Amino acid sequence: MNKEFFEALRLLSEENGIPMDLLVEKIKQGIARAVKKEYPDCEDYRVDIDPENEVFDVILMRTVVDMLPVDMSEIAIDEARAYTGQPVQDGDVIEYKLSTAKFGRVAAQNAKQAIRTEIKSFEREQYINRFSDKVHEAVSATVQRVEPESGNATLMIDKNEVYLYKNEQIPGEKLREGDVVKLYISDIINPDRKPMVKVSRTHKDLVKRLFELEIPEIYDGTVEVKSISREAGSRTKIAVWSKDKNVDPVGACIGPKHSRIGNIVNELKGEKIDIIVYDEDPAVYIAHALAPAEVLSVQIEDGEQKSCTVIVPNDQLSLAIGNKGQNAKLAARLTGYRIDIKPENPVE
Image (cartoon, rainbow, N blue to C red; front, side):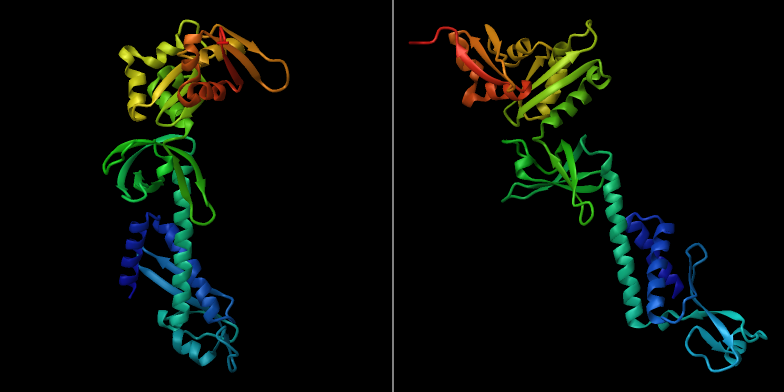
């Protein structure tokens, strides 16, 4: 019986990745609750589980009485002497081993349920611990399967499944089984019940993390990312600034022969990236943010609301605004200003 029990215990430990000593403690607690339910009058009992020596004992501490026992917490002196083979006396306490069959079906079921609950709790804690230090970080994940109808995908991160919804995928990308992609871990939801890691490929901070991974000057803090605005799958604007006057922030981001920025663009499936030089002067910063359009002047408006008027050459108006207003919207999000773009010579 004990051999089968410990074989099952070892298998349970290996399959669930639970340390044996922790698993044993959880099982002891579950069995102790079952003993308490089966023998409510016995307050003194012990559960011994030793996987190394394959010892599994459930013991009641019973007081020897020179009369009829009132419940299982007591034992008649004659029965105690016969059980122990010792000349015990009235008032002595003996260790009385229970057969596992003594628990009955209900007690065994209670122990089993307690163990299952504890394992689920442990698995939840382990899952959260594995990802808690990865929240707000970019990680590599391997595509396991893609649902043909919904387009939602299941990916693996360090042997853990995560679910990437279609609306968190880059528009236009086609994920295939075996693909390795970068995911941004934005949150852990339902941590107290059934935790799930929320991942994204559309989050703007994915771009920031990719820049940190590809560009040493950003990783070591020489070049700082000041702001990002993004329309996933189409275009991103990222404002950078160098703490070292000898380091060109744009050049550092682009890299030799566009190698650094090229790697990021490839990861983002061809998404266009405008690298903007940040400036403490809002007017200069806004002019940079509207790249690739040429800007003639920027007038910062007075008032609490951050807004400005930008004048561009007539032939640059559509470029400054962008297709469906995209360039202007991204520049506004990047700088935090409401931008009103006007042509240099309005057509009468």
